[in-house]
Picture 1 (cartoon, rainbow, N blue to C red):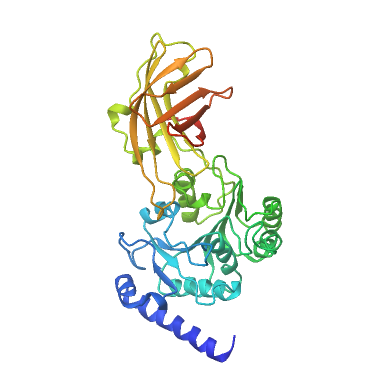
Picture 2 (cartoon, one colour):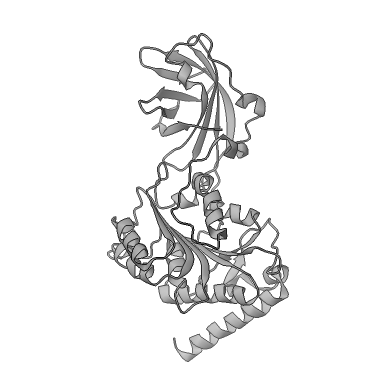
Length: 391
């Protein structure tokens, strides 16, 4: 780094330190956006401040195709914020496309928050932000309590970058150097930034080093590079991630069960519509469909399907759908449906004349529900595998 850049970097660090000392409210009121290394993680939630907060989370976003950060704090961080952590969002410096400069800036920001009396620090990042989070937690930096890397990548995607395989080869040196009380790395099916084979290499490094780390490789129903940003990912892993970050002792194996019915309250289904009726004289093929079902489309959207009553070959159901990624506008809501069961095919179909979609579902050999919804006006159906919800 030349003297001019070093001087500017030092001034930025000093300014951040001075402003954090004034308190969280002053921090976000005084600093112009162009001068920030950190900014508020949520615009509509209170910052507790270093004397009160359980700790500080720095979320490092990925980069959009044009290099601009995807700024919305993802749903998976919400559980930590609700548990008393202050959440900041990392803003890469102007030369943030240079990994070392960006990682150093993130490490500096973490250290300065620690020096301002935040008791614990966690780094959570997606894509490029996940890569930076691993790179920033190294021996020369202030010890980090937890690092969570969601689909870490820094060298482009398949078919777009000649260096994209470095997303695997250059990841192992990060695993060799990362220092944190807990480390979690999530890798997803269908990730165009993942050359493959990363999970085994990471696990070998973490096991040899004896650090408290876990690699969650291709969790079911979560598809694509942005899967870690979805509400579906947060519903499944948010509470477990919060519990792990808050632990001060080694966590051991990372075992996170699928969410149950009690985790579905934000779908907004009225209680009276969530109740189930016995399948008195329903067709033997229809009766097993009565229940509460949940799954995720390949797009990342969640589906909640409640088959409430079944009588002979008729059924009543509630279909609800949630958001996908915070910051991306997508409709949500619920609707009541009436369907007919076809014993010959084992398919329960909802195609009421007034509805603009048709729903088809069928119980599979493993007890799950094959589910698809199609617009009557045409187009490819959206498909998901729904699993019965426990209480």
